[in-house]
Length: 559
Ligand code: ADP
Ligand code: MG
Image (cartoon, rainbow, N blue to C red):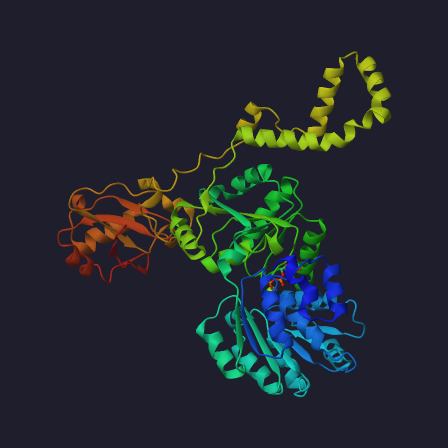
């Protein structure tokens, strides 16, 4: 895909489309575009597999625009997308690429908006319909003929559509479109469910696959940092001081966490907002628009709320909470480094999540290097650098406008120029710590962990998938002949050590000194018991209840 291949102009597209694409600033087609456009133009069915951010939208939108008969005012192309955001994004892309093709009408059809205007827009001559499957099926129920003129069908992000449960809706839609259509399917992954759809509904499809490894993560610089779960917010605040970002998206797992982190960021003066599933749709769109145009710099989002979000300004992705699987890691960090730009992705890892980090490294085929939290010196340097660059444009001119005032003030105050300048600096920096001792004093974080490889007992043992960081305290070494047993009852069930002790003594018939340490955590407890006769003891305790709940004590293996 070098200039010699002729770029977009060599792709046999309508010159008006090429002109519009070049006007948006694209210089040459991406790999998926280069390969898909000729296939779609030639009328073949196609399966395109490529990761997020590879330019799939234009890969189907450009050839489809080329095929539309503008003089016919009826639906000719249907694009299905998993979410309202993506449908809107694709519809907007079509409009952009069709800027120099008068008469092309695009309508987006999705849930959460009134059906009437959508149906009217379709009937009023939209040639291109971009829809979410669920809402489109609602329309089909009202008017089963609404898709009868469609000749081109695109399934965008097919894997996501299936994950969201749209399988049945897709079948209904396939049935409502003439069989003579051309069908194109794009997906980041091709699980068997997608292959079976392709077998049933595509005709001799051509395959295009863009290797994900080189596409997704190479332009993105990745690093991870070890932190305790309860120190994530201070860690993020510290990182933000030194990272030079334009716009940033921070991923967390829960709605509450989006609110907490966004509030902490706002309190520090960042232009930040939360994005989660509870936030009304139109408000979500406002947040994304604000991030695009710079009214916001940071969005704190859950995976669902950020699906498909495409904001070229994003230079940084902070994985504040671990993603649930490696695929969503790749998906998340694909929010930056869009279209070949450089991006940076940071991942916060708590000790128990080390294994997930290894899985991510295995799946992406890349090492995610360990970084350290910036120390006080680095924070100070960054603050001074920011101050310097904010003053730089002023020093050239301020003397002309404020020089006389400065002379007057030094004379009125009877102080040196240095003393006045220092007073002004203090005022301008608003109490911010700007010497090393002061910066050190404001950093409450404990030092991070031993690097990977140096597994400490504290870091690795007892890492059960329990919730809450307080529960990560390391178990003590066991005495000879003792084993540790676990129950899912803990403090949150109203359990105290003495309840466990009492129950085991009474029902197990053990001597007091046969029972070792008892540790009660929030969501579980550990009890040290004699290994000798353990099976029998556990079966005696089989039906034991404590605080009204079944004890269900089991041997606990902490490897
Ligand atoms: P995907 O659907 O594969 O995730 P998109 O179609 O959303 O990717 O494109 C990702 C970003 O890349 C968008 O901002 C888009 O405008 C931009 N883009 C697409 N094709 C090109 C190109 N040929 N040159 C430059 N930027 C492009
Ligand atoms: Mg896409």
